[in-house]
Structure formats: C-alpha cells, structure tokens
Length: 266
Image (tube, rainbow, N blue to C red; front, side, top):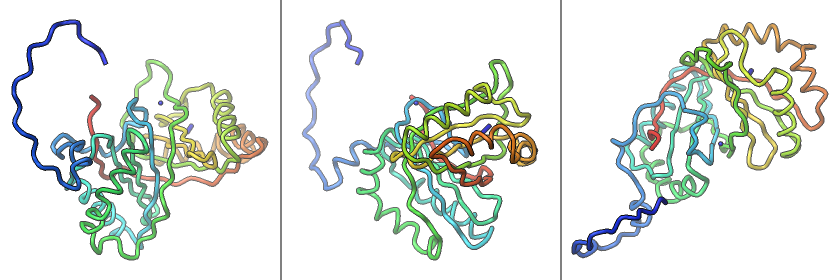
C-alpha cells in the first residue's frame, strides 16, 4: 500500500556599510529569492522532507502524448527561468500512462510562500508560457498536508521509484479522513510489504474533503499484481473502505517520472 541558536561569544564591532540601494516595487519579494543555480533537477519529490508545510497537487490534461510532454516541459521551463523564493521546496511533473494527464506536485515551506510567489510572479510566468497551455484543461490545484507515510520494513532495500500511483478518496471531514488512514495502517501493519511497493504517503486536504495517497512503486506491473490480488473487490482493504462511514474511493491513476526542480535540504 499504497511532517536561534544564540552564541555566547563576543562579537566584533560591525564594519561600516554602504548606503542601501533604492527600493523597487518588487523589493520585498525579490529580497527573499535565491538564484536558480541553487536549485537542482529532481524528477521525483522527497515526499517526507521535514521542511515542507504546504503541498499543492493538481493535474493538466492535454489532447495526446506529444502535447502532454510539451505541457510538462513548458511548465518546468517557465519556473527554471526563476527566480524562485526561499520558501519554494520542489515541483515535480509526472506523465500519466493515459497519454494525456500531467501530475503537478508542488512542495512549499508554507501557504504564505506559495501565495506570495503567485501574487508577485504569476503574470511573469504566464507570459513565459505563452501559447503552450492554450486549450489544456487545468482544474485548480488542491492544498494538502502530509498526514502519514508507510515505508518498507526496517532494513529492507528502497529502490528508485519507476511509477507513482495517485489514489484518491472523498471524505466527510478531517475526522473521517484521519480515521480511514489510521485504520488502514493498522490493517496492513504499518509498512510496505507487497513486492515492488516502495512507499505510501497519505495527504489530507486543507478542508478535510480529500485524501490522496502518493504511492511509489518499482513499476506498473508490480502495482497491477496487487490490484488483482490484495486490492480486489471483497478483499480486506476494499472491505475497510466500504464499511467506514464518510469515505468513498475515487479510483487511481498511474504516472511516470518526467522532470522536476527542487531546493536541497539545508
């Protein structure tokens, strides 16, 4: 299956400083940005990195495989042109095996950093994208926080993911969402044990109406074997979903790694 150290040493007198440069309209935002060279390619996010307080998950829907890849590349190219604020952690774009969908997974220090970036640079990014997104469907992304993650047993190998499964659930509020995830962990023993499974990372939306499992697998075939086995109708997992009030399964989509951009952990 698929959260100031003071120094006791005396300090030397501060050296004289040059007069401050005149401010610009964007000074308050640009002062907190870092140049793009500090970032690095990261096709997949580190889902459990500890410096993330806000996650945005969305999809872009193109009209075929060629446009699907072009959309993903255009989106990342626009952000690679920078600058990106200090509160940015990562953005990963994965290609759906349906040949149309692009998964957009963003990590931020917090909501404020993401919203300030959109206010300050949203128009600039839109101009860079130009015609690349014309006619592409894009429902508004949903804000999430990571609730719990499931890993392989201690000491087990953790291979590089070759496939990501997004499993979605509708929930009637936070209590139902947390109860579902907690009971699922108890049911399966709290660790990944199916061959080919790497991790399950359960996100709960800010309004409590969605649970998304960002689940990493070695490949599509490994996941399909579990779909036809442990996840079949009448199995323990499906029975749990059916008996819990306020939880409704919405299905899953498969995605393959493509491109990403991330800031290394400090």
